[in-house]
Image (tube, rainbow, N blue to C red):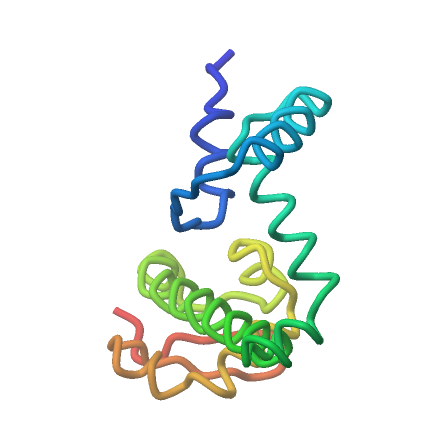
Length: 150
């Protein structure tokens, strides 16, 4: 039996979070402390939850008083995340096609842990990036072929 890397896996799954230091008055500190104790979490996590919940429930106040459009920010973050994910997947393709001359869409999707529709979208929209990596691939039917295999 191999040892579990659960803490290492958890670190990989955690999104990157920026750190902020805040000072709290006595009342706010007591509220956050009680929350943390009641949920068995740290002060930082309790503070993060309070801030996150306030942001989610007050988009109108944020837009009106602070000029922050939550919908635009959410879309901007989602787009950046999608681009990062696509680039990660594209960068895995050369290694995969070193081992095989062709692969089914289903097998490639399973290997990349994405759905078949996402694989098709990737090839249709990111073909130029894939070609720049030296990948000469052709999509035909339910398979992807490496052209001029060695």
